[in-house]
Each structure stands twice: as structure tokens, then as C-alpha cells.
Image (cartoon, rainbow, N blue to C red; front, side):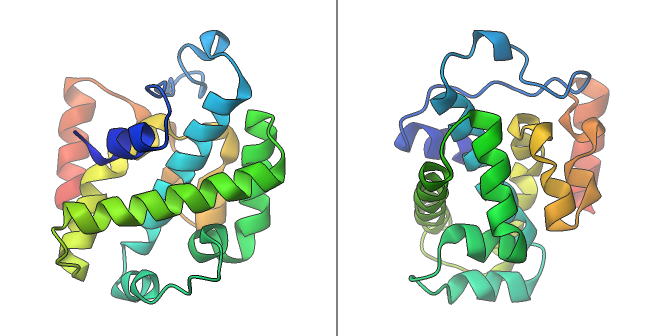
Length: 180
């Protein structure tokens, strides 16, 4: 089971809807009932994108290793943009910001626990970076474009619709991208 599905299941969410690269919305968004699912998908994928961003540097990895348990995950992952990320997820899902903050904390804890399990307790930068490099395409396929998270993480490729595309050519291009 991939890490995204494991986290989603542990947190009690049904399968996420992929984001259509053309419309930049969930393919069956009209069929998604309730704000819980929209909020959950937005929060969990945002958390994973934050982990991905920190996995790009050894400094980011060490930052996570030494996380202050009293600091919310939203601040750890999104820094000065934490309030804006929470507000965007809140608007996207129609959920109060307090609930979104709690959800991000839960997603951060579940993600970190699963990362440790996935890496079999051997936390090193190379394995951590490799894990999130392999997840990047999957994360982006489920990350709602309405969040504009790339701007807040200073990575414009996160908001680029070509990274949400699927198919044989796109799949090959994503594999080549992972090598670099």
C-alpha cells in the first residue's frame, strides 16, 4: 500500500479523488459529499507536500528530526505561511480553521509515524529524500490546485498542471524527473 493511502485510511477517509489537470478540480468533485472529504484531502496532501519540500535538503530533514512537539505541524511545515495555508484549506473544504489546524496536526503525526515505519526506523536523509521523491507525483495528483500551495512553499512546480497528468508519456517523464 502506498504511503498516501495508508495515511488516508488511518485517518478514516475514503479514497481521494484525483485532480483533473485540465480543470484543476477533483474529477468527481460534484459527487464528493460533505466538506469532511474535501478538507481531509486538502489537508493531508498539503501536509505531504510540506514533508516533500523539507525532504529536499538535509537541513529540512534535520529540522523534522528535531521537531519541537509543542509547535504545531502547520508551523513546522509551512512556516510563516501556516495561517494562510490553514485558511485556504478551511475555505476550500468549508471547515472552521480550528478543525483544519487539528487535522493538519493529526496528519503530520500520522505521516511522521508512517515515515518512520516505512524506513524501518532507520531515519537518514538519503532514504527520507528518496521516499518523498517517489511520492511527489502521487501527492500532486491529489493536491487541490485551489490551495496554490506552490507559492507558499516557494516551488512553482507544485502548482504546475503538467505534474498532475497521467498516461504513458507523462509517466515516463515523471520517472525521468525522479532520477534528477
